[in-house]
Every structure is written in structure tokens, then in C-alpha cells.
Amino acid sequence: MDAIHMTTQSSRTASHSAITLLRVSLGVLALAHGLLKVFVFTLPGTVGYFESLGLPGVLAYLTIAAEVGGGIALLLGVYTRWVSLALVPVLLGATWVHLGNGWMFSNAGGGWEFPVFWTLALIVQAGLGSGSWVLNRRFA
Image 1 (tube, rainbow, N blue to C red):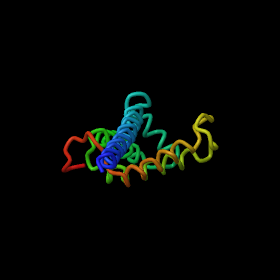
Image 2: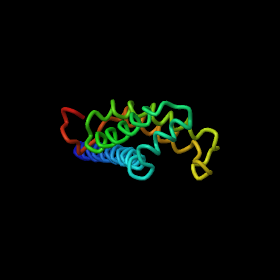
Image 3: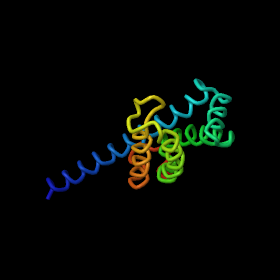
Image 4: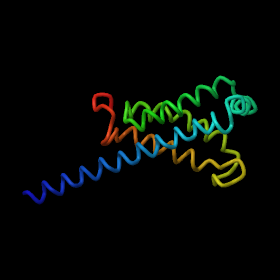
């Protein structure tokens, strides 16, 4: 009986570690993409790009806020399920932007496979929850 309990406990620990690794990775990605829009593309450049796509410029600010805020929330393990789901529309928008560039993200302008994968990873994270190492279990 002890061997079964230890195996179950070991599996649970490994699962929580994998869930945490996924959450932290998604948080880093979201934060990096949001900060890229601020510090590399600049706010006016990002707004201009959104407008060149026919989107309202204000959507650029909302996207940056979602990516930066969502990235920080995922890193801290705060409302992981809800934050993951809230980021899905942002990634569906990115998929739409890259759709005409083909499958591979290494294509000119970036393809659509990376934003689709990222969308699916966020949906999986929403289903799995926060994992371990969260700021406050009450808000996980």
C-alpha cells in the first residue's frame, strides 16, 4: 500500500510541476510579447500597425494591457484559469493577422501555427489550473 501511495504522490507532484512550468512559460511569452510592443515597436508604432490592418488603434492598447497584465498574472498564478481564457481572443486575433502568411511562423510576416499552438496551450492551462508556486492559493 505504501508503494502505491508513494507512486500516486510522486505522480501528483510531477503533474503539478508540469502545470506550473506550462503556466510560467505562457506568462513569460505573454509578458515578452506585450513588452515587445511597448519597447521595440513602441506604442505609436503598434497603434499604427493595428490601424494598418483596419483595426481600431485602441485595440493595440487593450492587447498590450492584456499581454502584460495577463503575463504577470500567469507568472504569479493569479486567476490562472480566467486569465488563460481571457488571453485566447488576443491569440485568435494574432492568428487572424498571420493567417495569410502561411503555416510556418518563420515565413515572412510570421505564419499562423505559433499563435494557434499558443491558443491551444492557453485552453489547456485553463483546464489544468495553476499548479504549484502561486502568489496566493486563494486567488489561484
